[in-house]
Each structure stands twice: as structure tokens, then as C-alpha cells.
Length: 304
Image 1 (cartoon, rainbow, N blue to C red):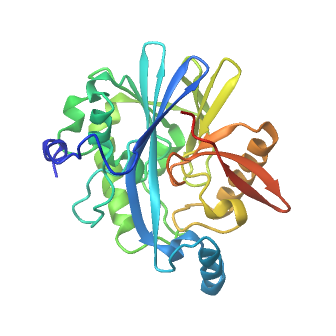
Image 2: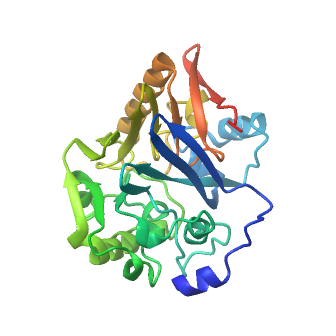
Image 3: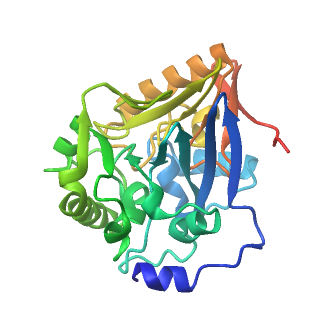
């Protein structure tokens, strides 16, 4: 599917469900945009526990046992003269039947954000549901020639020869991930600016290496006027509050992912700051409370 086809079939502005949510972090404008939902086998949510234990948790959450629908969220951040896209959703992989995802381009257009206006992209990691929107046919040609793409150096290095030995992905996903990463590097390699542990992308906008989910996974912290919001990418999943020790099938280093997840949840509980995650229900703005040996997700009240 090409970019022109995506735009021609984009939904009207009166979509039946909300797909963007605006908020202010000090002097910085933030827009959470939904790229749709990604249906995956539910067992991917935890592969280090017995299926019946996972099923019991799914029952408690009123979720089906067979297929989990992961929300896909990205950020657009405006700081000073810069417009920063944080991740880019799934795009359209013709080898995967994922009809409910890949909506980013038309939803950017609906929000009045032209691809040509984006000055910077931060990629939390190079899984296809985070870079796919950038590699739809025709997208790269519409991006600015001076576009800056910020990716951790460890992430670029990892995808030269990715290790899937500790993952538990559905069939077809490793090849699709490899293909997407290779295409991304072929199109944007000359525009990539790597960083080791931290990079200031714009005033008040900082990319910070976390590792875990992938070796170069990073998060993006937005801070201004005493307020803060962090986009954690895939560091925190819905099941991670109740069961932070459960391993997600897409984690390349599950034990390190658990360490990163617990550390972040403890920090958010202590600071009471809000965060956004790729795969939490839209608009994915949450606070964290401690609940015994685990945590409790507290959705932020929508600000009208």
C-alpha cells in the first residue's frame, strides 16, 4: 500500500472513536495520536507463566484468551521551532493482515500536521510497529531533506544482526521485523543521529536509553515549567503493573526488561509524574501507585 492510497482511504474527521489527545507540558505542546490497534495472540503477553495463570489474569481484566488487541500510540511534540514525532506506528506490511493498525499518516493529516513540517523523529526502538509509518511507499519523499532521526547507537548496532533467541514472537514476526528495520536503515540511514545514553532533541525534550526491550530501546522525557511527561515506548505493558515479572514475547532480553520496568514504575510512583506508553489504552496517559509487591495503573482524568 502506498502513501497516496492511505491518504485516499483515510477516515473522515468525525471518526467514531477519538484518535488524538492534546495536552500541555509547561510551554511544550504534546499530542498523543493513535495508530490503531495491533491484534496479536494473547499468549505473547506472558511466556514465563503457565497458560492457565495468564488466562486467569485475562479473565480479571475482561479480556479474551485468544487475541489481545494492543493499542498503538505515538507522540507529536512541539518545542520552540521544532516539531518532533516520537515513533511512527505500524505502517502497512503486505505480508501481515493487520487491518486495524497503520493509521498514523491520515491521523497526522487530520490533526493538521503535514509530514513536511516534522523536523525531528525519535525512534524508541526499531520494531516495525514503531517505524512502519515512516517506510510506507512515498513517505520518505515527503519528509524534509534535513530531517533529524534520533536513534540510540546500541539499537542501530543490534539490527545489523538481531538476536531473537530469548523472544517468543508469533510466527512471521521475526522476518517482518528484520525486513522493516533493513528498509528503515536503507531509507533514513544518512539522516540518523545516534546517541549513547542521552540526547537533547529540543529544549525540554530528551531521549534517554533504557535498554531491556531491545538493547537500544529508549524513552523520551518532556519537561517544562515544572511539569513532565515521559513516553516509555515498550518499557511498560498493561500486564506489567500487576505482574511486573511476566515476560513479554517481544522482549529481546526479558530479565533486563523486567529490571527496567520495575525501576521506571517505582520512579513514577515516587514522583507522581505521568507517562505515556505505546501499548496502553488510548490516550495512554497514566500515573502509578504502589500496590503491595506490584503496582496499580491510574489513568489520568481527561482534561477538557
